[in-house]
Structure formats: C-alpha cells, structure tokens
Length: 116
Image 1: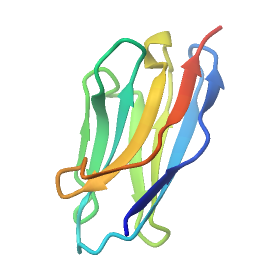
Image 2: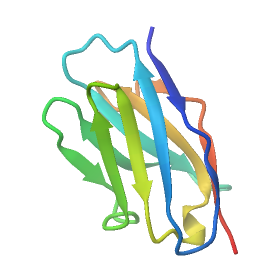
Image 3: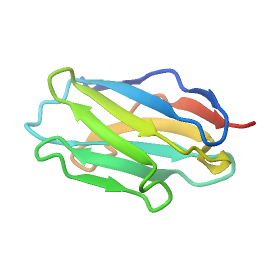
Image 4: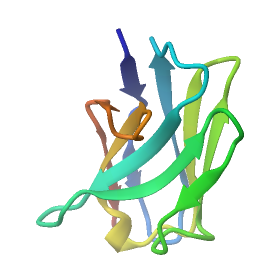
C-alpha cells in the first residue's frame, strides 16, 4: 500500500526559504516518478516539480524554475522540495505525489503561506 506523508508546511515571509519533505513508502516499481503539486486558493492544481527515481531526471514549472529544487533520497525513501526566494504567489496547499504518471498516489497535503 503506497503512502505519501508530507511534513508540516509553514508561514514564511516573502524572500524566505522553506523545505518540504515527504516520506514515500509502499512503491513496488523499480523506478517511478515522485512530484510536488500545489493548489492555491481559487486556482487549479498545478505540477511544481517532479523527479524520476530511476535516473534522477527532474522537471520544474516555469513559475518555480531557479527557485525550487526537488530531490530524492533513495535510501531513506524521502522526497524533498527546497523552496527559496518565496513569493506571495507560492502560497498554496502542497501535495506530494507519485507513481508511473507522477500523480497516481497523493499525500494529504501541507499548507505553505507566504506573507509579510
């Protein structure tokens, strides 16, 4: 049974940094996608970043490229999202996801608020 459990989010001032983590367990594939999605109030859910566990290939949305870094620790089955230079528009519920399509399985989400 796949489980994805995000760390607690938080509230950060604009320009600040925050690191999200996600414990991933139960995957039986030899390689799979892990990703972060987010949904801001009143907006559609969007893919933020993804990583393929087999070769480490990554994807970033244009809105976060250069500011966010996704990483995966294979030994610990942990997924991370390092977020820097945070903006108010980064405020959203962030979801850890995974699977062959990157979104077969979802965590419950964690709230990130960027506000002064």
